[in-house]
Amino acid sequence: MTVHKQHRANKALGQHFLHDQHAIQKIAMALPEGSSVIEIGPGPGAITKALLERVGHLTVIEKDDRFADMWREESQVYDKLDVIHGDVLKVLDASVKQQQPEWIAGNLPYNISGPLTAQLASHSLSGGMVLMYQREVGDRIMAGPGSKTYGGLSVLARHHYHVKRLLLLAPGAFSPPPKVHSVVLLFTPHGITPQCPFEHLQTTVRQGFAHRRKTILNNFKGIISVENFESIDIAPSQRAEQLDYDAWVRITLLLHPSD
Ligand code: SAM
Image (cartoon, rainbow, N blue to C red):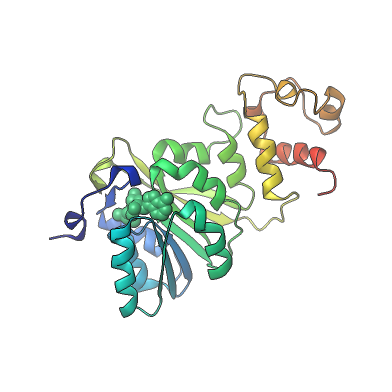
C-alpha cells in the first residue's frame, strides 16, 4: 500500500497528495545536495522522503496533528529532521529566523497559498524556493504588467526573486485529484538589493490594486497628486496592472521618503 492511501485527505487543510514520481524527483533535484530546507506541509511525505535523501537539514511545518505526530516520530530516526507543529501562516517568520534555511519547498495548501506567498516572498533566501500551486495562482505570480492576471503577488514575488515555471501537472498526479492543473514554480534570488522595505511595498501594492478598474490616481486619491505621479515618471491615468515592479517601488519611495 502506498503511503497516501493510508491517510484520508482533509479538504479543509487543502490536502491533495502528490504521487507522480517524476514530479517528486524534479522538485527534490531543484534543491542542492546538502542544503538546509524548510518544507511546508509534508503531509504523508511524498516530497519529504525524497528531500531527506538529498538535503543536509530539513525542517517540516505541518498543521495536521496526524502528520505532525508521524514526522515527530520519524525525527527520532533522522537527526537532520526537525518538526514544527503549527499553522505556517503563524510560525513561518519565526521559523525562518530561527532555522535560517537556504531553501523553502512545498506543495502548498491551495486555500492559503495567496497570503502564504506574500509572506514567503518577504524572506530573502540565499538559495530560493520551489513551490507548488494551483495553476491559476501560479499564473498570477508569473504574470507581467499588462496582463489581466498581473496583481499584487506578481509584484511582491519580484522583490527578491526571479520566478520560472518548473513543472505543469495534471490533476491525476495527486490523490485525491484536484479540479484544476497545478504548477511548480522555482524562485531564485535576482541578487539586486531592494530599494524599499518589503512591508512598505506590500502596503503600496495593496492600496494600488484595491480597485483594479480605477486609475492609479483614483486609488491614491488625496495621497498622491498628479504632479507627484509625473515627478516619478508615472502617468496618473494608468491602471495598477500597467505598472511594472520599478514603478511600484517609485510610488513606495514617494510615500516613504525616508526609506
Ligand atoms: N506535501 C504533501 C504532498 O505533496 O503530497 C502534502 C501536500 S498538501 C497539498 C498540503 C499540506 O499542507 C498538507 O499536509 C496539509 O495538512 C498542510 N497544511 C495545510 N494548511 C496548513 C497550515 N496552515 N500550516 C501548515 N501546514 C498546513
